[in-house]
Image (cartoon, rainbow, N blue to C red; front, side, top):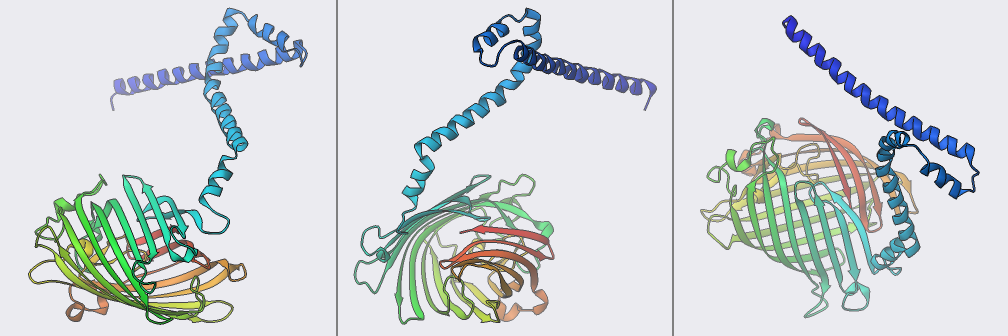
Length: 447
């Protein structure tokens, strides 16, 4: 660097320093005058003479008013902000607004209530339920509404009305409608060897209208049937630091990328459970066998069938400590010469699969996973609510065809720990940290 450049740089720094120093000195003088003026008035007049104080302030000289002005101006925003906050809080308290809203949203008999919700996939919002909307007793039907938002236009809206009886009381119906927009979904490619460096992002918008029917065959076994109509739209993602999936993986290389499609879906499920406490079991099992068929209604490019098995076994140890073992397998196959769109394929990376990976980390037709979780209570309120600490280990893989491509060497693993809050109705909140080859991920959920 030349002497001239050094001199110019030094001169610029000195000029900047002088300007900053002048500003600081001006504000200091203003504050000093304000404080000195307040002290003078306090000393010269009695504390109960408001008129004298007002007269003393009016008799400031012009130079004092000019010097007083910067400090006075600086105090205006916080002064009126605090005044506004105080008046707002006083009004809310006087009008009992919080109590009235709580009374409206949450009834004393438990038939109506509202709760906060949060998950990484939905965002943050509120849920509202109303039992016994049309009939009595309150167990006859339930209205449930949930709305959540997050940054980058992430949106989730869901409404359902279940336990509706039209023909017979043995076949309750559930009607639901859903809209979900995820603007920053990740896609790394297909297969268990998808590389982290190939990360891209996309936006998916999903809309669905569905009707479900269920019937209890026995105390432990139930049948469920679903008929739904939905649309899926894949467009460019909103994460500016990542390449767009639609540019890196065109539709001719990955089915469903950059397209919009509508489907009619027929599904069925048989489930069985035997739990000592349905909300927070310490022993028993849960098992489900589900299948579905998806048919594209606005074209003939995509269609598939799926079958899945999901089971969890709870083993009680002592003092409400337990092991929870879970195994899951899922298989997708295209129908005829069509393809399976990537957003309907099996996935590893969701919290419900292997914790420690980004959502959508591994995607393919089939998936198998195993999970083990050790839980022990850290606080318990007469088995009605409580907090549990847990340790977990997850492992699994995706494959184009599990029957021909399955390999234990392709398994991905995740381990971690967390805290869960539960009630008799089920899981209320959870906070977990998972570690995989990709690093750590934090999971927070509020139900």
